[in-house]
Each structure stands twice: as structure tokens, then as C-alpha cells.
Image (cartoon, rainbow, N blue to C red):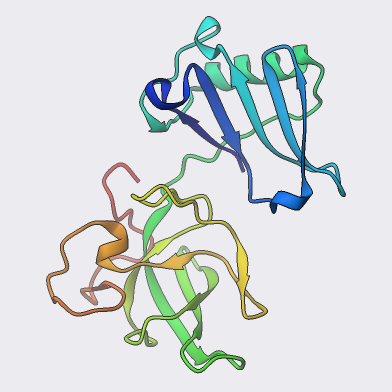
Amino acid sequence: MWLSFYNQHAVGDTLLLTSGELSRDLIASESKGNVTRIFNKETNETVSYNVFEISSTFTPNGTGPVQLTDEEVEQLNQLIKDAGFEDTLTFDYSPKFVVGHVKECVPHEDSDHLNVTQTEVDNGEVLQIVCGASNIKAGQKVVVAKPGAVMPDGMIIWPGELRGVASNGMICSAKELQVENPTGKKGILVLDATTETGKPFFQHG
């Protein structure tokens, strides 16, 4: 799953593409023409591309996270291929902020404040998400940032681990979502119990 970003004013005419995180000590890169590939030097796995002078091929629509059209994705993959790289990039534009239903919530075995949840996000799909909010409990309807979500502050949600336990997403507070909290209480944003599981939280997804 790849994400695309474009900000001509701040970065220049460069399309930034990423598929995950990588620690600095593992970063390596190679450039061919207007394309730079960033990869894990131990595994050779590609994690990012920078495509310079992208507007000579197409101009991304928007600033920040941008959604590419099917035609633009095809053109992008051709640019990468023509530069001599082998990756084929695919993008998932399904909603990343959705209503979740906390089906199970148990204490993390190696923490005095974390809980491990099993949270349904749509059509029976359940994500294991570690949550540190004091008000989390089973039965709640909550807002889930799924892997690939870009938070309002620019942080990207990737699958990871917290204290050795896999966590695939984030259960969000109103502050993290930059929305009003009708309850005024700290912790995660708890929605009305009748809210439909899997429904996009933001109209744009």
C-alpha cells in the first residue's frame, strides 16, 4: 500500500511516495534520472520514491496527501519503469478513518496503562489495536484510523507494535482528529452506540 504527497510550495515539484517507516541506520538510496528510490539496505525492500519534476508528466491535484487517478498511477509506474526500477506501485483509496466497534478490550500484559483491543471496522473485519486511553472499554463505538491513514497533524498510521504486541491502527481522540468533543472528556472519542460500524468518519474518508 502506497501513499502519495505533493506540496510544490514547501518541497518543490516532487511527488513523494511512501509505503512504510524505516530507521535511519537502515536507509539507503539510489537515483536514476528524476527518480530516487529509498530502500532498506539490509533487505533491499523499497519504502519510498521521490519523483522530481513530476509536473512534466502530470500535476497532482491538491496539497499534502493527494489521490492519483488511475491514469496518473499508470503514468507514474511507467516513469519508475523507464528509470530502471522494478517496483509497481498500487494505491488504496478506501476510507481510512472509520467507525469501529470495540469487541474486546483486555489489559496489556506488559503495561499498567495499555489495553489490547479487538475492534471491528467493517463487514466482520477486526483489527487488533493497542490503546492507551483510560476510557477505552469493550462495547464502545469509536473512530479508528486504519493503517495508511494520514492524521490531521501529518503523522501516518502504519502497522506496528507497542510493548511487543502488534497494533494495526489507532483509536482516536477528538484532539487527534482535530474535531470538537461533545463530551469534553479526555481520552478517545466515544460515539453514539447506534453509529454504523465501518461508516467513514470524515465525508472525504
